[in-house]
Amino acid sequence: MEMIQRLKEETRELHEQVEGQNLAKLIMNHSMDLETYKLLLLQNFIAYRATETEIKKHLPQFKGEKHQQLALDLSPLKISSEIPSENDIFECRSTAEALGAAYVVEGSALGGMVIAKHIPSCDGLKDIDPPHFFSGSKSNLEDWKNFKITLEQYPFTEIEKVQAISKAKETFLFFERVFNRELALG
Image 1 (spheres, rainbow, N blue to C red):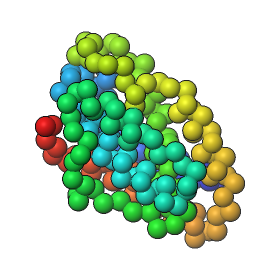
Image 2 (spheres, rainbow, N blue to C red):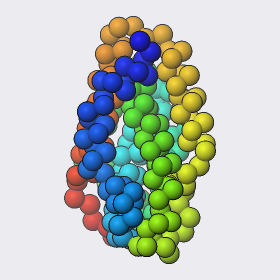
Image 3 (cartoon, one colour):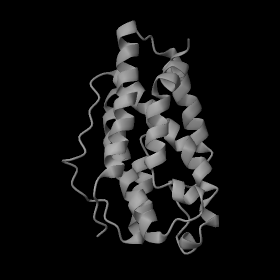
Image 4 (cartoon, one colour):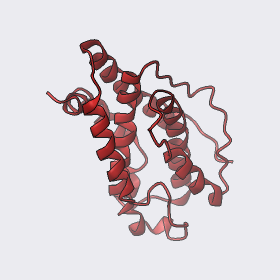
């Protein structure tokens, strides 16, 4: 079985659990208001900054630009991206773990493409600048395709496969912790 398929199957329940808690569902049902949108962006910024920074340590070719896109979205909304990260510790200790984490990060960007299509239907977001993160950019699809190639070309040992799957699960749980954390918009 391909590694991508194993990751998908082994993380399916966690993926659905975390997705169900994500504020982005309010974009999907067109009920998102501006204050909640700010919180959604900040949550995602925190999660992506931590995960992308760690992934890049082991996968130098990894772009890791999502947190930068989110910072660009936060700035005109007067939300600081200079927030402490002591509570947001995330670590990758190997290439296999970085690949597991990248599976979650790159895959979530695909979901962001779907979410982007619904932003214009949210009355509460009519006055925002065009988003950088929820832009619907086709480059996310290209990043996903490149990631899949990297994943399938990596010569995983059986132990590394287990490590990658474990890190993917841990990454979903990390996103969940960030999504459930109390954050002040200030």
